[in-house]
Amino acid sequence: MVPKAHLLIVDDEANTLASLARAFRLAGHEATVCDNAERGLELAKSQNFDLILSDVVMPGKSGLTLLEEIKGQGISSPVVMMSGQAHIEMAVRATRLGALDFLEKPISTEKLLLTVENALKLQRLESENRQLRQRLGKHEIVWKGETMRRIMAQIERVAASESRVCILGETGTGKELVARTIHERSNRASGAFITLNCAAVPAELIESELFGHEKGSFTGAGTRHIGKFEQASGGTIFLDEIGDMPLMMQAKLLRVLEEGEVERIGGDKPVKVDVRVLVATHRNLEERVREEKFRQDLYHRIYVFPLTLPPLRERHEDIPSLVEHFAAQVSTQNGWKPVPFTPDAMQALQSYRWPGNVRELRNMVERLMLLASDGRVDLGTVELALPKVIGALPASVGPNSGPLAERVQVFEREIILSELKRAQYNMTLAAKSLGLERSHLYKKAEQLGIDLRSIRREQEN
Image 1 (cartoon, rainbow, N blue to C red):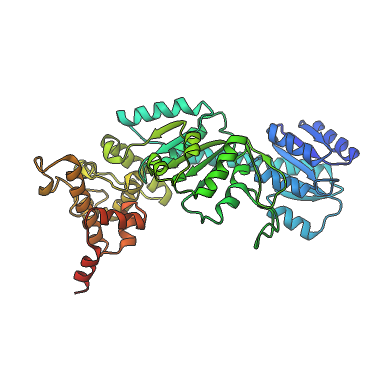
Image 2 (cartoon, one colour):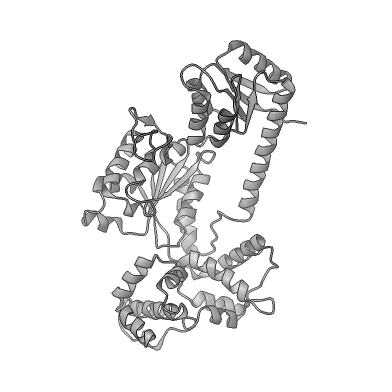
């Protein structure tokens, strides 16, 4: 039996609206009708429809434009297009824009009802997949100790609000995971969660990525592009590494935050957006402001509720739970049998400082499971994967060897040198293993007095 569905029908012909609505209602469904695309978009944004059925050719805005805007704003309702002037190019374009199906008028009642049934089945499958991903813990924050208990309490408190959150922490501490958790526990959970890494997008492209562009607005702009802010309308946008955003873009972002609207490149009118903004950075924003690399007015706009994530070295009590979680995740993804970790292996993992944080731990768990012999991960397996950095502190970092900052620097130096040796002095591999950007590893080595040129010369000789 097909469950009752709520449908939106958009068509400029009154007779078509009446006959389709009657057919759906007789079949036990609920139908909302409108005769133009503008109104159709308003209804699609304000209500949840199980299916949207739209004509292509209408006065004013076409059905294909409506489809593009529905998909661009992150509205999840499947869309079926219909037309009495159908041709193959039109059907292909509708499919590329995200239409579930394309029907040629006149449409039989039987065909329409079958389309609705298929759309509902597809939604059920997608819902089951989402639930399965949640059970696998893809987006689950794993914790046990007091440090993370306080963080989780803050997440619960701020998630229920509309406040902007600035998530701080080292690379690999799980900033995006926290942002996603805030979204999923907020009143916007049914809306889109859209992300952008500000450090990963070239400066000349970031405006188009955030705000979109109109067709022909610049060389290469062959079609209209809906930006991240419009895609996130009704939901949440997460701007990762905002401390690396170019100053010019910071001014434009500030305007969006103040006025709640964006303007596409080449556009002639602003577009209203309803978006909650979450940001993250591993940088010290106050220092960036002092260096005039980050706007002070933008800093005050985004720094409403700072949330600082601790590095993994400060939450050792969570490591056994994280290892168990990642091991189960890796086993499920690869179809492997569970691989237990011996107590001494777990103790060794807890004694490591994890410069790459949780991200490094996840990669290490998979590596250890691949290296495991006799169906388990023991101390020997861990020592093979992490040579010379497991166990007690080096003698140079003994209990009476100077202030804490000096001891930490010595220990960091030992870790980096050991990882470089293990990677055969390949900076790219070493940086990846440590969970760092290559440029960050070069900078860190310089700060710690590691002469990379001398090391290379020694290796060549």
